Amino acid sequence: MATSNWTTLHPSTFILLGIPGLEAAHVWISIPFCFIYILSLLGNGLLLAVIKTEPSLHEPMYLFFSMLALADLVISTTTLPKTLCIFWFRDQAIHTSACLAQIFLIHSLTTMESGFMLAMAFDRYVAICNPLRHSAILTNRVVAKIGLGVVMRGAVLLGPHPFLLKQLPYCRTHVISHTYCEFMALVKLACADTTVMRAYSLLVAFLTAGLDFILVVLSYILILRAVFSLPSKDARHKSLSTCGSHICVMLVFYTPAFFSFLSHRFGHVAPHIHILIANMYVLFPPMLNPIIYGVRTPRIRQRVLHVLGIKPS
Image (cartoon, rainbow, N blue to C red; front, side, top):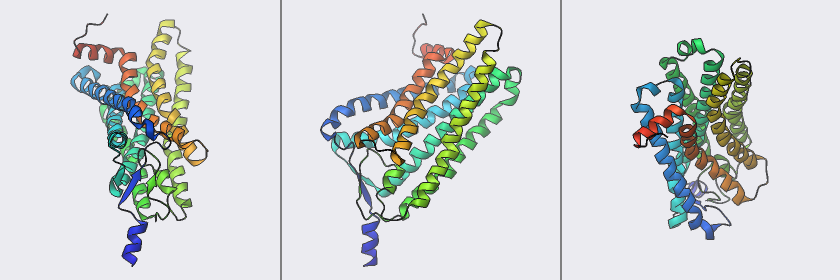
């Protein structure tokens, strides 16, 4: 009897509905989703290949690019294939272990992405505010330590999430109104007091993405102050152009991320709107990051054109 009760309250599978209210349009929605996923794979794969094979790009800024590109590849592959299976084949069942693994990967990798963006902001701060010491401060050893620290922070702080969720009883329903498994989506299905878990999740979010965002804004305030104090107009333009790609990428990442996070916990947004925004959060940054860097970073752009056999105009 106890075993039966445990099985009922701790299901072996969950059901992902996709986008409730838009079921009839799932096939049509899958077309841009699939196109974006293919662009993400090609763009980030090409960016990684170019940085790996070109020794002149083995500098802190480009190494942080490659870390971000790798995280983008993993997070899009963690979510999009299952989403497309829901849209195309109505394959809505997901094993509990796979669901918990998806939650860990999504949240830990987005935390890592936030950390890599902070590292890139620090790199630009040193390059513009203290250029003579840039190579001495950000050596390859230091870059590797920063990268490892960002990865460990994401893994350690988000590691408890799947274990905490696995212990919760789910007596309300096993159906998740989403295209992928999400921490708060499962918490809302539990029939137990989740106050501590919610508080822990909020604390982790503040200590990672929230704190990163504050430090990124602070670093760019210092950067802009240093840029506008430069005597040469060309120097100011070059410095602003270098920072432009980073600012674009951060806006693409943080805007849907904060909207999704806040609406899930405090807002009353229509379910299909929330789910579409949550998908933008994992769809658009992996697609747009390599495009933004490829277009706005001359050395990457020239190398990509060379690899593709296109002569720059």
